[in-house]
Structures are given as C-alpha cells and as structure tokens.
Image (cartoon, rainbow, N blue to C red):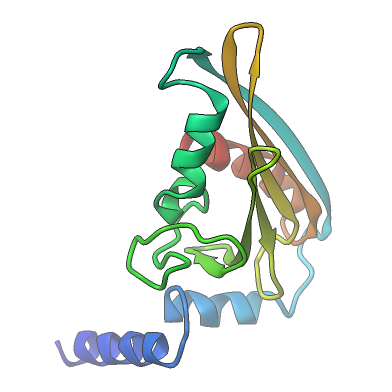
Length: 168
C-alpha cells in the first residue's frame, strides 16, 4: 500500500511540475532512447472508407469532431489533452504524451482538413502521423500516413498503422 501511495505522489508531483504522461513511462522512454534498436526509416499509409456523404457524415464535420475532440481520438493513449485536462481536448500547437510513445506536438490544418502529430525528442518511434479527411465520389475517407526515422521502424510500420487505423 505504501508503494502505491508513493507512486501516486510521484505522479501527482510530475503533473504539478508541468509533466505530461505517465512518469514511469517517461523513465522507460528516456532509458530506451539511449539505444538504436532497428533504427531506420518507416512509412505507412492507410485509407479508410467512412461511408456515404450526408449532412452529418462528411469530411468537414468529421475533421472538426476529431480536431476539436478528445485527445485520445487523434493521439492514441494520450491522458492529458492540450488543455491540460485528463482526457481533455486536442489543441493545435500543444505537446501531449502518447502513453507509450512519448511527446507529440499536435497541429490542426483547418484549411486542408488534416491533423498532424509530430513526435518530439524522447518519443520512442520518431516521425510524423498525418490524418486527412476528404470527400470523393459521394463517400468520405480518412487517410492516415505515418513516416519518419527512429527506433523499432519495422514494428512501427505494422503496429503504428494498426493503432492509428483502429484506435482513433
């Protein structure tokens, strides 16, 4: 019980000091970033058909819901939103923490209906993920493109694509 309370205190102090994410994961990522493990380029693209266009299901509406919605809808595993609230909102230009991956800066490109997640130093994988909403031939789509250079590149090609396809 004492260890649990000590962990809670450590986590609380981490947040009070402006930290983001899970403190123990921060320690793990910092340790891991000292090594180059399968360090190479990674790249994946996946397009998801979100159905026929109507007044509630179109690129603009879906983009706005995601770009202004809960952070976990666009940064898998994020605990604090850009507004610094638990499971808070995505805020363009803010840095949040993906639970395992690490720090990510979020950019909302309203003109192109695209959300961009840019991994910051200390992120396990490195790189950028782009989430684009668009209409085509009476249907609405979400295209997810991930690319970059960093640790676990082969793992990221498969798991990154899976996570961004099925968990946002």
